[in-house]
Image (tube, one colour):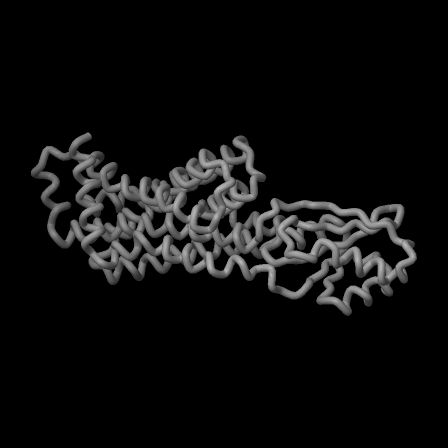
Length: 331
């Protein structure tokens, strides 16, 4: 255990002295601080409406006077549109012809009443239309939800990159080649190197949530998702370290890693749920789902168990594919 902790301490000292490694460690915090300045202004957007295509044309035309209108088929499609990252107010009708205003719960001031006022105007203030409200959201700004999720994801990925660059530094110094002449076992070396990829994102996650004022979350759930997701970045960090001959090559390989992570994140944000099946292969997809669901208070332990199983299973597949390369690189 002492040898494992000594590796972790040496990595922390090395990371604090090396500018690039130190920057990778604090970058998520800096991004969160920058993001915090934009959160107060997320409500300053024009109105967008998602209307059921069965609504009378006169009502639709009235809505168009107040903002952009998208006509969708059925309440399910409207709820899916309202639940996406931008602010959209949904309007549909039940079988009795009563209007139902569909909200996510994070709309700006005045957004909750604007649809009702438009409907009343369309009816000539005669009260001919009855209005009901349906709240499908968490009450948090979508900008905050996905902003916090993305920064936590960056913290996890960069922690793996710190591992990779530390391994590159060890290779350049000849430390890895000398391991065979020391009492230290390969497993101890791997565990010691992995510590920074596990502990760093947990600490950074709590700081990020505090900076973004997202403190009303289940911290046990968020910690579980960060720990499970860190396994992926740790393995990829080792892979970057053993495949890269220098830091420049390591950074180039990191770009490919972030491309995959970005594609998975954007898929969750932009794609309809039915099309997200094409992202099931990516552990990052399940990480984004888990983190965003915890932040919106919509996650259950059973659901997180399923997400964790997907992440661990896919991580084991990745490890199985690259195990020999990692083993040879650390020999």
